Amino acid sequence: MVQVLTDLDLIISKSYISSDGGWFMDVFHVTDEAGKKLTDETLMLHIQQELCVTRSNGKISRDREGGNEKGGEEEVVGREITAMEMSGVDRAGLLSELAGVLVEQDFVVTAATAWTHNDRVACIILVEDAIKAGPISDPKRLGLMEEQLENVVAAHRGERKRVRMTRLGAGNTHRERRLHQLMYADRDYESCRACEGDSSGEHKKGCDGTHVSVGKCEDKGYLVVNVRSRDRPKLLFDTVCVLTDMQYVVFHAAISSKRSIAHQEYYIRQMGSSVIPSESEKQKLTLCLIAAVERRLSHGLRVDIVSENRVGLLSNVTRVLRENGLSISRVEIGTKGGKAVGSFFVTDCSGEEVNPNIVELVRQETGGSVVTDHKSPHRPHKSSSSSSVIHQTNDTEEAKQKFSLGSLLWSRLERLSGGFGPIRS
Image 1 (cartoon, rainbow, N blue to C red):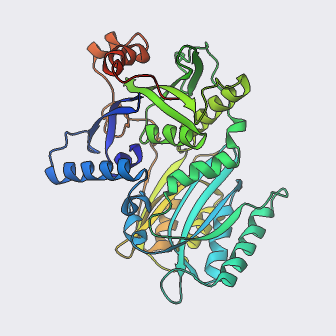
Image 2 (cartoon, helix red, strand yellow; image 1 turned 45 degrees about the vertical axis):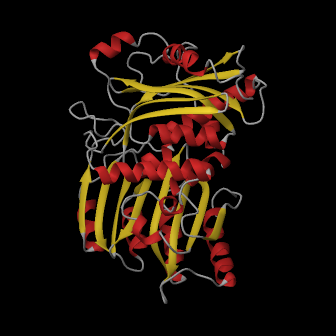
């Protein structure tokens, strides 16, 4: 349900989630991207239909799951897709080398998404046949491509091979959800470090890190998870993805924020079990939640491009960045109406400021529009809350929320669920 709302570019400002005695009540306060109230009746009807399909089928409707990145959806909905998935150790120029191999084998890139975290990288590249438009159906050709891409990835530190060429039915893979799974399988969370502070997970003054605490609710058999972090877009989506992939079921939750700090509180159990996890499992959960919050954070210079899509475009842009000593920390690019639209987040390999002249070099290579933004994309500006996935509450609400969000939630749920019978295990 959160994925549906996120893919519709809605901002979730507050949420209460509850399932008890075979019933559920999920409340989402949403606005548009500008933080304004929704007034379009057609959009509201569409939201209702999407959520109803999700609940009845137990999965996201096919026309929404193909990929939510802006600019890429038009090209991947309604037909089969050929995709390359890769995860492993990050290094400067890796994406450029991968893109170069795709060009050599007459593959054209229609969309690409890549994240880096804790010196690891995960990426998904959607490709088509450059000679005859459409998916690649020849298994020998796909096998050869996979082997060559594996050689590029495995050429560094003897890494185990983590490249897969696959054919996807239309709408079967949500790229951002899949990136979380790839990063989790690659154990990027093992290098995460919890912020110093007390066990309650409270945000220390001047600390911008992510605070996670995992406690117990013995009488109900729940783990009580509190996450406090910098507010940013898609934060709730990222957190719920990881809980789901780790086989935890969310029974109750309360989501809100204070100023630019997001607060998430969850009451969870492991799927199919009422046993409280061990201390080592709780520590793993803590690190995985920190990783979920951090993966989407992007550092360095943001370079936005709009250009006519063509064979070798991704290879050319990444080559220019590599030749100028820049490392790519994140990529989101797709195609719309024959144009490539997306963003590259780049840092200088030597630790210096990125030379702004890179903009002109990229513009010459793409022949399109290129703009930059030095502002950190994961820190909302004080003057605007529209970029935040969990908005700021007013002063009166702040005064009222000094107690646990769970306390407020439980006080309401006790009355709601009193007649539902026993809590399902």
